[in-house]
Length: 262
Image (cartoon, rainbow, N blue to C red):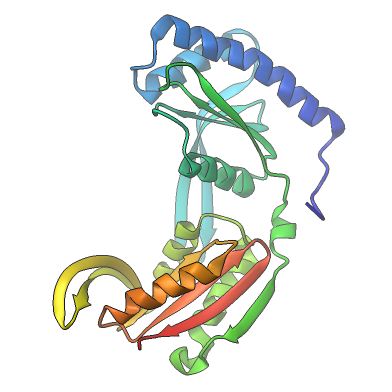
């Protein structure tokens, strides 16, 4: 990864030393208490063992993010020594959603080393989570407007709003987070259900975010956007939408695409 910052050499080493001890506590808890309790119970017991043994630990640490009138509050399960984010789960297995959530927290907080611990499986499941990109580095991106139809974005209002948001937050965060922030700033923006239509018949419905009447918007973070483009086109062809304003954040490349109903 080019341009990533190098934290002090001992930060990574210190993290692994701390994690070795913390995982001893996690395995002990799982052995003694099993895998059928709720997340808060495991969190409280791990918090107790970590703190009792002289390691600085905080529970449910507020992690806010703001853009204009929009604010969202996240909460870090455990913050170790003010540096390392630990997210605890009670699931049959860790999912990509768990991994993405942890990376999202790390990017916002600029904490490069973290850990996912799952108490819900038959044995303790655990994964390191590393994210060394700084916010300044995530603010450097290129923009592709090849398939953008400015006629459906009067005054470039949507494009400019997305650009302002990315300039403030940078890329690589949770696409849902970007969407919520945009919705809070779009004068006609709403989240609503629309009909899905086949041969003129309503066959179902789907919740979408509208930039304005009959114009939906969607943000994704796909490394292979072409298959998504095909599926999104099929989707709007079976709705009463006029178009979909689609923004794909592929690392530091931002592609704006307008899909028009056919």
